[in-house]
Image (cartoon, rainbow, N blue to C red; front, top):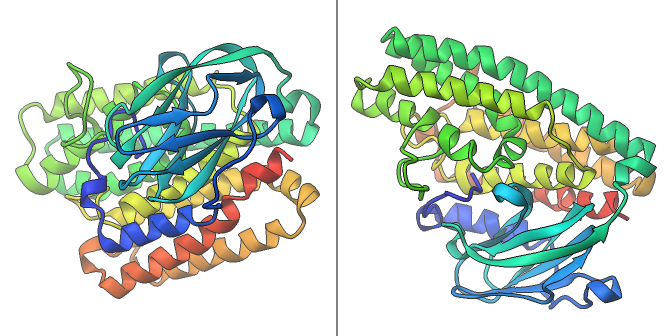
Length: 385
């Protein structure tokens, strides 16, 4: 959900989601960061509602840390983009007055782009950022890190291998005009998408076509397409004359994603950041009911995001256990707690609709995600230590 083209989701956050976002952010220090690239410390970023001050215009290649302090009144997020708006790293849900770190591995020199997004909307306040020289990739020198990224890549590939046929089934039902079958298949197909969303989002042009929503900001010529356009047809407007064409385009975009993922190079830090991003997805979209606003199948996505986070952490587990033996058991405990909570909301092979939840249900889910977010937020720092 954290996309270059994401629209004003912050405006629709409920009180529960704001609490979740703040608690997730609170796992980092509120103190101003110290240090600069030349001294080996973090690069200070001060993000306000109408400005984005970066403490340095560049850094040597390697592992770069940005310490992002929100000096504004709106929840914000911070990105580092590569060529073509390829997301190198991002940190979301930084509440007013809080600081969160973004750790990103950038082995290749060149011109990159930083962006603060006050209110978590639009293209953000952007500045060029120069990376000089080159650095060895962590996977080149550390066998366990190399095994982690290779294993995770296999897992992502397996999810896409399931995503393509399940989306085909959904598309076939839409094109046949079988609305009830399409409704049943919609949350199932999206499960595989939601598990790998950070990888999919790294391709900035694919994500808004597949998973954009009606009120999102988009580049000119990019319409309301993908899963959520068909979701609205199925649950609100009825299948429209162009629904078959929209369904065909969705499948084509999913197949495009499949072809790109075969060659994507992942870093261990991306795995760690992706695990946290998926929990941020839960806090800002699933717990609020914003993600699947027409079908109310948000708990399917909630479960898939948690599974995706757990998949990334599991790939890194040998490294985590080697560097911080106390963190793994904490992760196990909190993942198990979220899983146990979600089991209470089972309904047949799926889950209750979001509209069936009470405010107490939402509060309990927010608290469980907050508790899980704290140890997951430590993984990137452990992996790069």
